[in-house]
Length: 432
Image 1: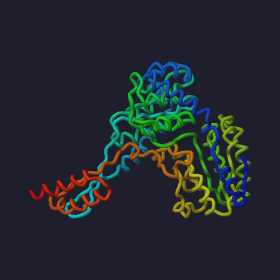
Image 2 (image 1 turned 90 degrees about the horizontal axis):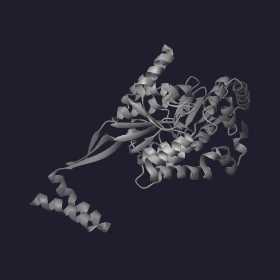
Image 3 (image 1 turned 60 degrees about the horizontal axis):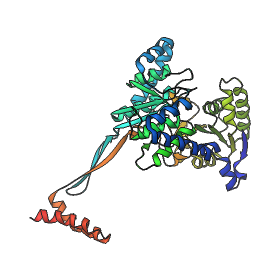
Image 4 (image 1 turned 180 degrees about the horizontal axis):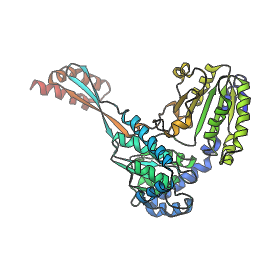
């Protein structure tokens, strides 16, 4: 982990200190992703099948989850099954309680404007898989979508290393009421959801995190004319920790490593006013790294890690706002004093007891969050991700008579005569 004194850095040095790993935006990766997407877009099922066999290592198939979920129930302990069920219960409670209310405003007598909400008809869910199948992501996507009332969910996930669907993902799917999942991953899966391929239907929106290939594919298909919407730029994981002298170095190190073990492209940063804390955390990171099963992945990720020495906690908060982390942990004595000043973060974990791991699994809010600085303008997945708002206006005859002339005047100021005449027609209808 590289340690830098923030106050001694110029603008270029600060930008470099907060830069994401270069491979996330590598030109070669972008070109490779677009080639895969265009192949599936052009050749449909044939292109998808070939890409899946080459990149996933086996033919894609639609797997009915019931039998595979039964395998998970046989092999998992009762404690493990209960933990998954607890997570589903908390996620469902949070999102069912987060539904927006319709409302109406009478902007002037006789003119009522309402906002009503409708769910997206069909949504694609990308569930990261392969060596680390993230069954929790399925819960974090499907349950909010169901709370919002989405009619059809199309789920895709890479096949597990031994082939087929991971049993724990199948169990999570069963708890969400999803009957089948396509075993296909990567950019090819995103392309199939975006354009449709064979029996995989085209969706209106694609949701879910993934590696740099998946993130780039989502961004690309969303940029095409008629392409799907996406939930957000959600790529490799990242965590920033703000720590003061009261922070426990071992706990902070454990939090940093919890994100570093996700992916070699994951990024972790520590911001602290205390050099003593910085040194103690770095020692703990090195010590704890030795015993991690995924030490190789975590160590590669730590190559992009930073420790930033800030002048004080307020300066640390401004560094966080500039970086806009996916996850922001406040390992400080009085976290609630900092929360009002935090503007840019996907999720905030306030205080030493608020482990980012709790948010990953069972706190209730979704762990699918914006990365790569997108938290400056994007929110994490929620019921709003799966809803659309429509305005509905109703106008009384008396109100139409009163507003027709001003509306027509405004239209003529913009040179839109047909608009003006449409307003005039209402006034004439009232007088008729």
